[in-house]
Length: 96
Image (tube, helix red, strand yellow):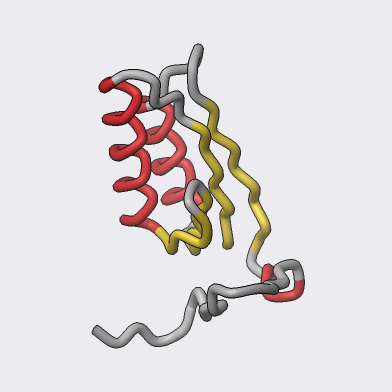
């Protein structure tokens, strides 16, 4: 399933900047950054819950926010891309 994760981390202090880096690092492990604080992650239900748990453990509930949008398995018809950055195939071949 495709999960869209967005976050807003308060970076007024060093602890906030550290949380921001940690959240981004966890998201990179599961998906593709599509905008500064937005990731598309193709995961199964167990991975989605594990990632949600990890991110919630990092965030400061009084200063930060996380949003998870569960787009399901047939997400291709629910996502449209316009603009400068090229779209990518989330389940396509990755050549390194």
